[in-house]
Image (tube, rainbow, N blue to C red; front, side):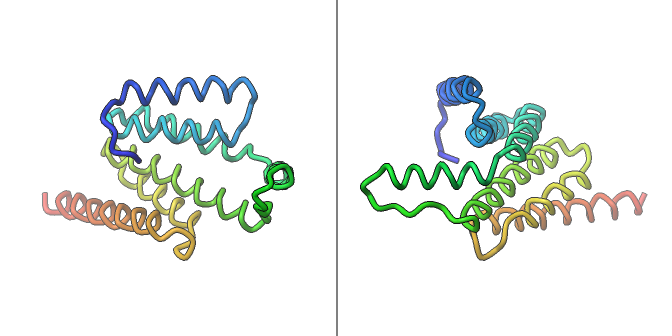
Length: 165
C-alpha cells in the first residue's frame, strides 16, 4: 500500500469509488474498493473494520464472472489501437488468485492483530498461501510466508507459556 498518511482523504476517495462501483454493480471493482478499505483500516489499527472489509472483498471477488472479464478484455483490446492482447483464461485466473491471496492476507492480518484467535489467523494465512503461487507474485508470497511464520511462532510461544504454568 502507498505510504500516504492522509487517511481521511484516502478513505473519502475509496468511498467515492465504492459508491460509483455499487451503482454499476461491478464485483471486481467492489472487491478492489473493499480491499483498499481493509488496508486503510489495518493502517489505522481498526482490526474489526479491516476484517469486515477483507471479508467483503472476498465475497465480491467470488461473484466475479471470469468469462465476462475475458469478453471485456477482448472488447477493450479491439477498441484500442495500442494492440494490447486480450486476457487469456490463465491470466484472468492468475489475477483473481493474486487478489484472493491478498484479501485472505488482509483478513489474516486483522485477526492476528486482534490476537483473539491466532489459529484463525493461521487458517487465513494458509488460505492466502494456497491462493497465490510462489512463481506468480514473489513479493506477496514472501509477505504471506513471513506473516505465517510469525503467527506459527507466536502460537508456539503461547502454547509453551501455557504449558509452563
